[in-house]
Image (cartoon, rainbow, N blue to C red; front, side, top):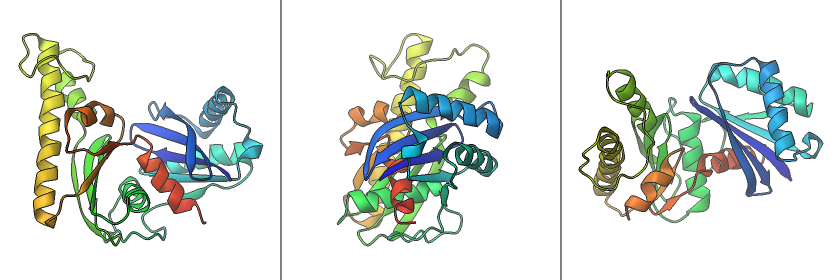
Length: 252
């Protein structure tokens, strides 16, 4: 079965084309500036054409969202393209995971669901490097242990740039050294190694609290920057959240 899975986030909309359980193609669209459902329909069709996707061959569309005002417009655009209603999944969608909170975001829930399916038999921590940096922990039985939410890396970087007069925009890459001598490398060190220290600190504290050595997954836009810098992150998977949404909607 061919499925389109859509993750609507605060910064980006990520699409994935799934052939059964495998995501063969994915792409990202920026959620800003705001677009109408007609504009979204045109943009989606352009991406379908780019990736040679025939809407007639798509049997199911699954949407997860943390932006309620976009959910309706994206769903409407998708319905016009596919002539069928998409399946909307959220924390109330049944799965083998117990969310244990009525406030849990769909993205965090999807991360837990994907981890439970893909890495069974152990406790897991999932770091999502998105608009917010989240760390969610789940046990072997699918029970949510807890979640941490901190400002996202790009969010913090943009705030730093916009609220200071002389700091430039920078590329988020590993600097040549921890201590920099020019503004760009100094900022890169602060954002890369500062957040790396936060992530490693979270892992140590969570492991102490759950009395275990958790398997750690990193996902989200800049996860690829941090995975090579530490042995504490075991795997990086940019499609992890999409996979969770797929599992949530697979049998609906």
